[in-house]
Image (cartoon, rainbow over all chains, first blue to last red; front, side):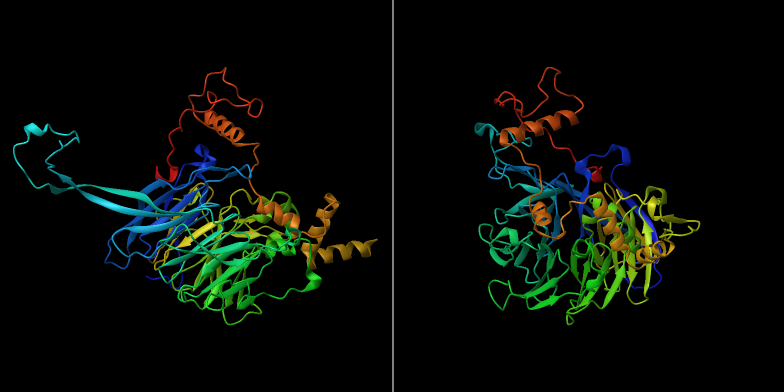
Length: 445
Length: 105
């Protein structure tokens, strides 16, 4: 039942969101994240809203269970602001959501836009007090002269209400645009990264943050690379990594010094200089970095591939998977339509045996590390009958196109899957197309 | 003549990236030689539309909101922003109610 590499057969489970015509720009999904148990699934969108779904399981005790994610809570996390100094708009788009491990009855998550991080508390209320002495049931105050007795108010059950309230607002610490947040395993701190700097926060303290990485050059004309993603190690609270637009990853140890400008490890794959082209640096830019759950590996996503790195080996990745190599001969048009700058994310399954990432035409790809197999699947309304098994898809790079294959020139580059998430324990995945959220489940589950 | 055509095809097979680069340079001869250089990065650092000031920004926002709501403002209301200095009467009196996400629908 837990995410083994095995023979995965993915079935459609649910799709959320409007049918194509009725969509606004605010509905574009910008982040998807399961919480640590997988019971809750959060999405953020361009309109600054967060929607949280809760899993409800049928036949919980049987090996073949069916689960469904239903709306649990929704709230407006961020609103558009205006930066008066720069005369620029600050978008309300939610760039990232990260859940905190659950410590009490309430759930907590961090959500961030380009400039401000907020800590949200999501709590349930299923009782309300009744029988006040001084107030009527509707809240109006009683006439004090009419009160003749004294009673103890009681708590009576009520329909479940889920409330979201902002508990902390971490603002004014980033000059550039925040691309990542990551909660530390110490349960006390988290980091936030923008294009040039990384800050360390205490979850309780909003008026102070420590700068731990600063790659801003004294002269901005000398700028050669920016930070693209950052993440804390899942187990070692002193370790974090950050990736760059030049395709490198730096691992830093906070015990070494207060300012981690000097890395402890630098991960970079050597490039054959004779293969270098105008596009080389752009397509080597890392759009996402994720540690494996066991903390021994990290995965990076660049434009055309997914790479798995062993933390003990800096000079090259241990595994490289081609996501859509057929796009290498289309780079000119992809540069012209800006698609070459699309930032795809990637994720691990629960036991680190399979990795997943998105592509174009609403395709997404899975790579089974142990079985050395890869799969291309599609998130589309046509394959959305309940428990319908997804057929694998194939792109024909050139030459004769076989039946059921799709040619590179027919791919829809507006249909991109940038955000995917894998349930931490089971083979349940959440795949976001531009406006819809698809949930798929492994048949064996 | 034939020999150079064959070479071209072979080149494309060996290095599709280089042939794509040649295509791009043919279309944009003024393209700089430092693709990942500071120009690109600096454009990236400053994303977002610049407004003249906060009045211009609020007028633009009001115009978008009026377009989205089916009960649009009366026809005689000014549609253009940046054309005149906004007065308090021109700005929306209160924030319109927020629309819920369609994922929660």
